[in-house]
Image 1 (tube, rainbow, N blue to C red):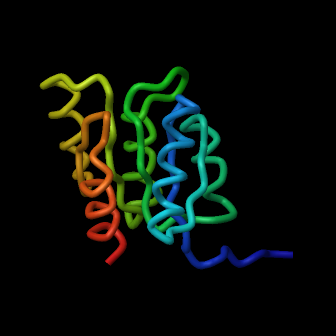
Image 2: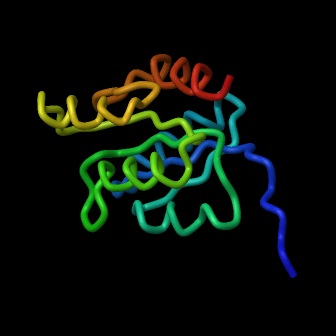
Length: 125
């Protein structure tokens, strides 16, 4: 039996740091947005077979699969999913590499709540 994926209705948060995931989830809920957290890029990508998000808030520097790798896979296989980059390790090189994949936004941690919500609104229009 083939299942039809549910229509997108949530924001995916992909970050290896549990306190960051918790804070971002709290922010999404306070703004009336449904969100789902993923502690790794691999877990997020695996979830795409059953449910696609409206957009993804993606950390760049994670163990295992980096945000850059996730961004590349999304661009190849799910180009319609908008990406918002968040990073605590900003460098000119990571900025240039991330922007080459055309994210909706590139934000540095600690992320300004309103900037992130504005980026999500832009991504999900």
